[in-house]
Length: 115
Image (cartoon, rainbow, N blue to C red; front, side, top):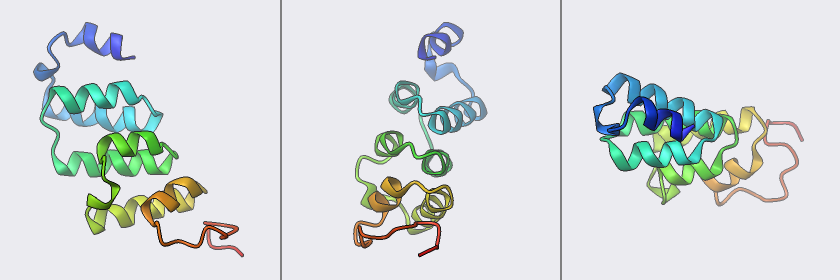
């Protein structure tokens, strides 16, 4: 997928802000780590765009993508952390919930609210 993107945009800096935002969110959602890394390395990505991509990654259990977006998961804003945490929990991604909430009881049986 990165090859296709690079064929369409040989200079990743030439991608419009809107297209970069969509590409980042889509790559995060689908778990295309190499695309996310290329976009982060080759273009200005706003904090808002990172937050949207984080939510997409969390919703789909893409912890590796989340760590590419935020190498230090503790640096995520409280607002973005809350949205990502809710998205991951609603979709049963315990590994993501635990990464976002290191104080969570690891013996929890159901992250979706059931006991």
